[in-house]
Length: 295
Image 1: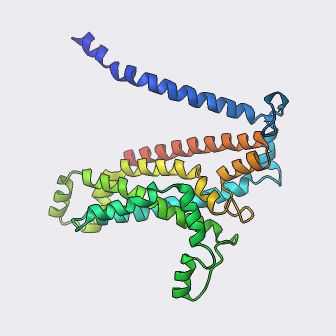
Image 2: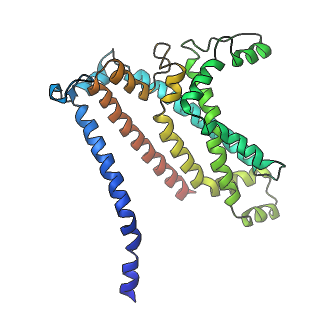
């Protein structure tokens, strides 16, 4: 009987092994070639035989050359990621709390909120470009309320225009996940908290958020990885400009590889971006585990 149970315990691993192996081998092969290309001087479109070995020259240029846009792009990416994730989570969580109440037409409101997610990102970028035009819809409302017009196409506000479009498009992502999590929570802890005389804010802080923490972490990690590699909306709106105002790390990869035609430097930025995503995701998970155990 013991041997039979021991044999059955391996069944899940055997079932997942083929899919895991296929995904791992494809990813490992891609990363291997990306790392290899980051160590050569290779012009886009030229034969691989013409690639010249450069070692760490591409990385050194990106890190230390004053003409490199790596640090500028990293700063832009940091602002973009932090602003979008914080705003989307807070708005999404707040809307999910409202939709979790027994309100009339909740399914209709939820369906409407899904619309921005299902739109093509490139189309969202083009529409956003039109809305943030100097005579566009956004400035119409800004001028109606504050009696001023803003130049969203300038280097000071272009990044914030992209951030606002991203918030509009992806806040429903948090709404859907948070709403599903709220509706799956058990009712007993809430009933006990009400009996103990807890206020609405105390129930939210001490009951809802702790029980919802794993779902919150999952949503933030998924969105975090997606925002770090987002390209289409930013490219459709401003193409990384004006100047370098919206040049995030993925846009820098495009500029180096497709515009400057330097595959080696573009691949080096890609490797750095992969390392950044994996490292920050790992630290985020470890931080969550530590705070969970301390709590």
